[in-house]
Length: 112
Image (tube, rainbow, N blue to C red; front, top):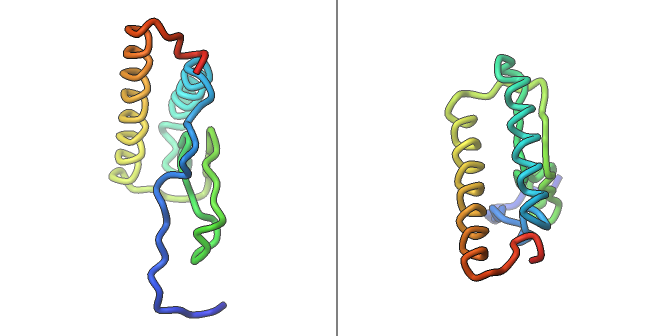
C-alpha cells in the first residue's frame, strides 16, 4: 500500500438519480422501512437505501450506491443511525416536493 500525504476527497453523491421513477422510489422506501422494522431490535444490522459508500480506503474511484443495503455484524451507535434516517427522510421529502411541483405543472413524475 502506498502512503501519501494527499487528502482524498470522497464525494457525497455519485450524481445519479435515486430512482428512475416515483413508483420505483416509493417501492425502495417501503422496502427499506419494512427491513428497518424487521431488524429494529437488532443493533448489529444496519439498513440503508441509496447510501454511497467506498469499499476500498484511499480509492475514491471505487464506489457503490445500492438501492437497498443490509449490513450485518457491525455495532452502530444511535447517532449514526439517526443521521442516516434523517438523510433518508430529507431525500424522501425532497422527492415528494418535486413530484408535487411536477403535478402542479401537469407533468407526470413517473414519465421523467
